[in-house]
Image (cartoon, rainbow, N blue to C red; front, side):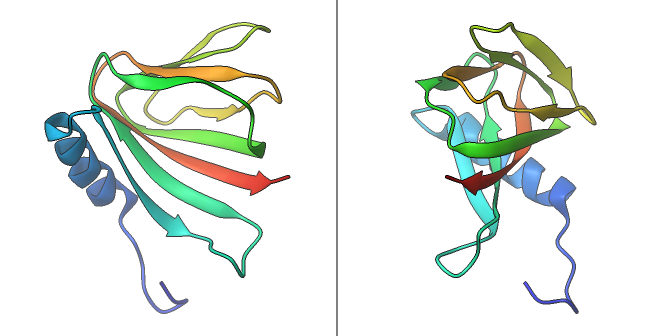
Length: 112
């Protein structure tokens, strides 16, 4: 993507949700920004309802912007439910993510 192009996160979220619903793992992801020459990495991650990301370590500084659906971020410090339009800071501790309904999020990470 260049400065002269625009990416529709809404369209990408819908496409990734459709893919997640047919995937055996119930999830799909597409990078939208980042790479070996960038510090910031952004990914649209879609989860079919009832699926999620198992408990894992925090990747570094990270946030989630819920694009579609509802999710629950689970961490020792507490669980947070979020819906489309909500923005969450991912805690710097082990956590998991559950899709309460078909959902897509924009994950932004600055790895350690």
